[in-house]
Structures are given as structure tokens and as C-alpha cells.
Amino acid sequence: MIDEKARSELEYYIRYELRGVYKSRMDEDIYEIEFENMSYSKYFKKLLEKDGIKTKDVKNISKVAIFKDQYIGRIIALLKKERMDELIESMNFQTSVIEFISRNFNPIITSGRESGIIRFKMIDGGENYAYKELKEPGFNVSFENGSIIVDISETVKEMFKRVSTVFDLESMTPYYAFSVTDEETAEKCKKLDELSVPYKYSDVHREIYIDFDSLKYEISKFNGN
Image (cartoon, rainbow, N blue to C red; front, side, top):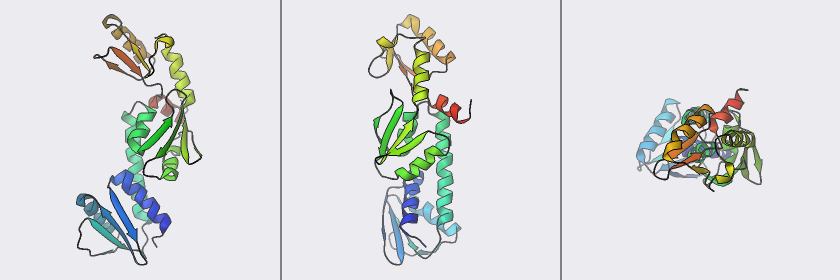
């Protein structure tokens, strides 16, 4: 039976796994989802058919109408697994925790990079599901007044400690960058590489931008390294 709880969970994974912009409605017998792009509706309908879930014929091919008296737990579980696989893959190539959150959770971030206490809400809602997704791999995450809080303060503190051996922290700009000359750029970058400090170099501005919210270091703590 498709109830409001199942609907909420399914629509979270439609938003964040299928990336399908949609609107939905539910009456006594039918749960109907309308996708902005029909390629999403076709894919979703194939998933339903593969799982033996019956749909009602509708004229608008961007819509999928499901009879409510059916179990959709397996579809939710499939989308949930695909979503987690996608998050793990994202963790493998992102360098910043905030960039990882921004890319995957459509957040409104109100604090975090320097303190290491990242506080955010999600534009489209679904904080309870996002909380579980961040908790599963090992992030130190909590809820407070409707916001998700990710505590990476130990990581930020460690990165500041390492960077202080390369740069004078007093010279850091408000956007966490350090100016460098052409002569010292290679040496500074080499030292940061040796210290496993993530950074980005801009040859236009001749600045090295530091990711104090190192995702790689944070992940290393998950495994007890």
C-alpha cells in the first residue's frame, strides 16, 4: 500500500537519484507522478514493470499512474542503493566536504568551512533521508532545529595545522587563499601535496586556494586510519 511515508521516501529518491523534476498527486486509488522530461517517466515506468507493479494507462506519457494498493518497497530499495553508490562515487573524486554536500544534497549552507561545523537545510526538503545517507558512511552528523549539522571540526583543525607549516595564516584571504609568486608556486604546491592538503591553484590570480574541509582526510577517519 502506498501511503504518505512511502510517497515521501520515493519522491526523495526521484529527486536525488533520478534527478527528475516532477509533481505528484494522490487520491483514494491512484498515485500519479508527472515528470518534466518523458525520458525520466519512461525509465521509471520500466522499473515498475520489471518489479511487476501495475500502472494505469494515461494519455500524457510524462505521467506515471500507479495503483495505490501495491508494494513499492523494492523500487525504493533499488533507488536507495543506486543513490548510495552514486554518493560513494562522488566521495572518490571530490576534495572538499562542502563541495560534496553542495553537489549531492541541494543545500542552503549557513556555516561551516572555517569552523568545521557545517549547518544546512535542503531546498527541496528530505533532511531525514539525507541525515541517514551521511550517517551511513561515517560522517559525524546530527539534527538541530530542522537543520543537518555535519561536524568535521577535527579535520579542519588538522588542515590548519598542516597549512601553517607552509604559509603564514595571517596572510590568508577571506576566501581561504594565499598569494604566491611564480618562483615559490612549485615549492608551495609540492609541500601541500606532501602534507595531503587539498588545494586549487589559480595562475590568473596567482593564488592557492585551500580546502580546509578535506574530504579525503574526513573519509580516512571513517576507516580508523
